[in-house]
Image (cartoon, rainbow over all chains, first blue to last red; front, side, top):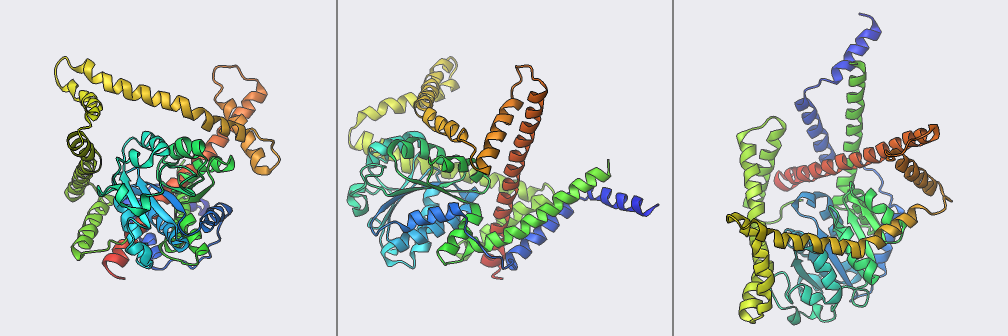
Length: 282
Length: 200
């Protein structure tokens, strides 16, 4: 067999590698990425900087609405971003009003606030004063629209644990979901959570909206940023890592982002190998 | 993410994660058991949470405790969806579904035009930057590709071919994002197993 034929034969074999070998190689690269993430620099992009500046503009006591639109499935990607956002909001002394679109969202938010808030006594011991969790409501569109008219009524006048909102000082000034009572709204978006928030709240009331989305969803949201319908979007783990760098507090997002760069290179190599194999195999 | 709390929780999460990963080798009983456990837990959690956070405050606190009997109307009306379980009750079950669909359509018609029109206006801005020029070109050529009902001349076919490439590039970018999203989930889970569980 000629040298060219041997190469062609070798490349053709690439198209028939046992999938379990691919899985094993993927796992090996992922383990390497977790244990030894490459020390790559993280340079914030304009979208992330815009979101960061909006957060930096908050003054102590300014209320923000945080809508958790993800469950356990997207926790690995969006939790680091939620923690980075919370770190900034707690540094700014903002009043946090949290609600969720998924049943798991309330627990996820509580855990994140308690973890990040451990370094901030005002939040660690301040439930009901510096933050509150309204919990989950089905029929998100209707609930949000109702919240723009009467926030406590939209949540039956109780928080996630069933305590009366009228007994929580934090809820005293929060009458309606709009710019009169809130400075900013955040959506941690797994699917299309930004859409009802933008359509029924932001566009109707003028409340500025920042969306933190999984990387897959971010390109879909970007056009709304360009038209001004959404104030800023933070995209996936990379966006979270950029946020951490702006906060000067590198953490889990930075590690995950650096690891995912290694993983992306490996995926590119797999794609190349698979396509070469298919071409050589005819 | 690392599970904070009792070692039992950490070990349970780690063992279940490994059981799920075992599917990468082949379908097996352990994987199927965990799959059923997950589905059951999710359904149970959703039902329990829905009752405690939403239904119970309405039924127990408002309807019974505060005598707000108006809540009984939507509750009974919503309960009609179960009428399909009774022979001859299918028509009754369609009533709440009809209201649901009609309400959704009305909501969409009332609010979505503004959202969409802003997007259309944003897409048709003067192509004074490279990004806007590419966007406009991709938009118009993409529309040409989906013109199935009109005959296309040579220029139209070329524009359609360009539109096809624009669609393929967009789908490719989306697929790339999907792969990385899954990889991030894997990295997060491995981070838990290696750092949170094994303490490496």
